[in-house]
Image (cartoon, rainbow, N blue to C red; front, side, top):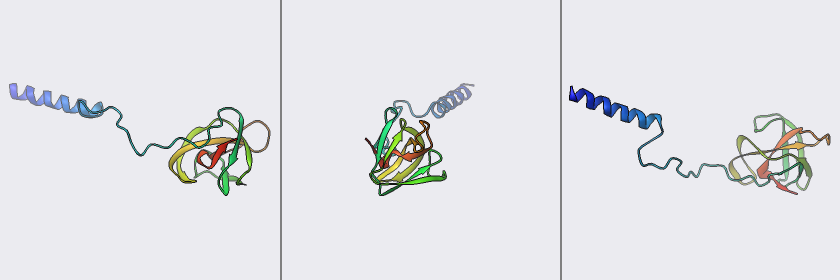
Length: 123
């Protein structure tokens, strides 16, 4: 009977570790080198960003899998809204990034597409 209780206690302990994420005493959120770097631009309010890439695609959504709506060139100034997270990408010297900036390229004060935040800078 005592052996059965011991097995149940050990099983419950192991289940608790698996269910609640790890070994007792382990750091709850260990640092990771796989986290995305901060975006190059944030467009903290409705404002502008400047394209730093030779060419940059404005996409229909927050990810490289979305349709290309327009292509812009280095030095172009774009009206923008604050950065958002989205699909991960590697571009403009940044890997594992996920910052996307909503862009208003029609000038109607509504977002029309998104650009990778790593490929622009705040104006």
